[in-house]
Length: 270
Image (tube, rainbow, N blue to C red; front, side):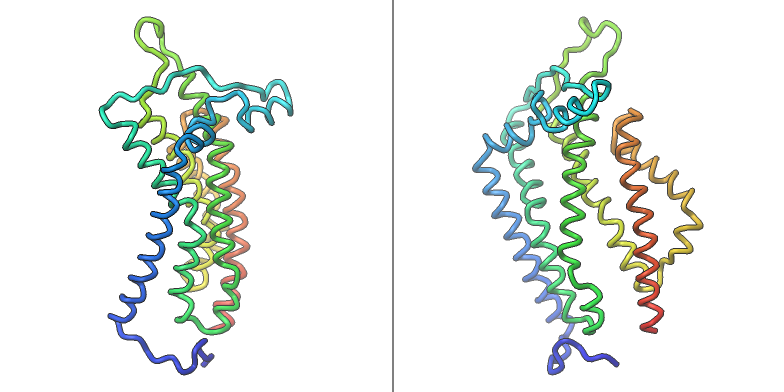
């Protein structure tokens, strides 16, 4: 049997494992709190350049699309964001700081998770998983950026520009600050986790719970599920659903190849 990384390492008891896990969690939470405080302190920059960025004509996505072709060009609709509850501005500020604290801390959180898992792996397993922290972090951040620069502009354009009959009489083009931030979070954070699909497939395949044959067999079913998922996390607007659906389909195809390699390693180890 292959040697563990630390040949002289004594078996840790269940309580010792819990103690070790506790310190990894504490350090991860410390990172989240630290960056959340930093974000909280720079509120003017955060809200002007990040949270309310999609309300500006100069936002990168609008400029790039308008530069590519006239039929792709669009600008954000004119709408007001108004706090409607006592303390809404403060608690929304806390929420934004919390989510950005998590996002910035993701690489370190993955690093702490890897440090906890690593001692229990054999040397060849560690070698196979080399670079996992970088890959996981890159995929998550890529998903966040995709949601921020691609999904959010189209979704905000659709939702803020949606009209009803007699809008002038019945509805003002305003939204609450909390609602706006909640939707922006929904357009970005879930996408970051969705982009972790190849990593999830890798581990499921490594332990023999998933095979590339299974993924190929149920590819059509998966496409339906992906489109339903895209419809759930995006507004009922075709372009936005296509924008989120295509990358997930690409990730699914990549995951099939990832599963194929992982299954070969699993079979060779057994």
